[in-house]
Length: 498
Image (cartoon, rainbow, N blue to C red):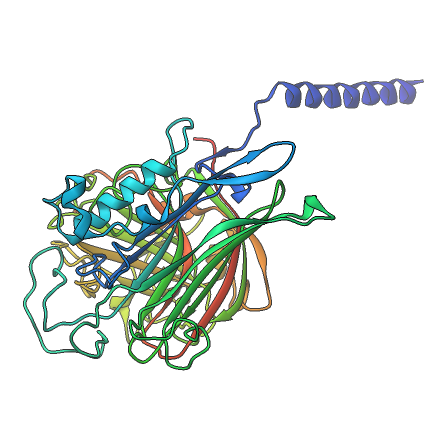
């Protein structure tokens, strides 16, 4: 009798728990909150733009007949009973606006660099989508060449005017004009209908080009020793995700090239720039409360010097913890990048290169260890750490970051696959997610970015870490005739509970 009563009570308790779970689930507002305007890249009405930069994230001189290096492909889809058509919001005249049009547009006071920033705002306005909590603009494809003519003193040094100096091997340059903008060609997105199977209709478009201004564009993709880039996108109408297919090829004249797909803030400055930008992130994610989800399929890696970034985060704050305000002498760009190319080694080393290690590592449980603690510090988790060139109280030994490749000083932390990152969803060993291993990643970027070391002046209030630029792609570092190819889809930035 007692056993029967206990069994009845147990069944009653289990039933109550099931009912409670159902009630809580039905009353819970459990929608995923996305930081971006196009969660998962599922929106048919695409918004995408492209930008090009020289070594110090400026323009300096437009490529002949190309206009300012900002273009956009933004459209809405109109459907009727008889047909479906694309209404493009940016036309060829918009995309080819040049510094030579500045006066007629009332922008005669702008130089070629600030004009490019103005053009981005103009294109952003034409592509803008009203949303909550604020409007958004477009995905941003970023191109950059690492060439630098050191004798021309074009790029500032840690935000201050630089002086000419003899060419060095760390800065490739074939001579005068080596910092040129690329030629950019645009295949506007079109609808490819399937007569027998209308549900199989596809949207397709893309950008392609070269830095070799005298190259035969029809042969640049396959011709040896010719730089080339191409980003194409396609999507099945009404379903699935956009797939962004990237190609990048270096040459002996342009051996250091970068190609990223970015979700930038819709207002304010983004990582690496000192002008207003436009982008996809209607909410700027803040550490530790966000995750990033995407599918990545790497076809070709770009060679042993390809710093392929599974995830690249860019932000800006001053050494005293105050937000950046466009003063390039005191602003500091902060980058953290996970490199998944298995050929990339840990240069951080306690015996040979302690200066390339961050002063501290913080484990996922909050335990912090100093880089001199050889028993516990995970040296193999770090490729390189470098300090901002305007840091006044740096812990010795230290290694300054490159003083020229941003308009202001920068701080860079590059990490590698290692077990210490496993709790955040990152790869724990070399080869994970590399060629032949396509994966859908969900990375706890917010928690990881909160734990990483970044310099601040002693005694200042720890900065709230906001990340206006979240991107992925590759930087092929000073390596000729290398090819990288990869596909990105399903990208989203998810805000977690605060």
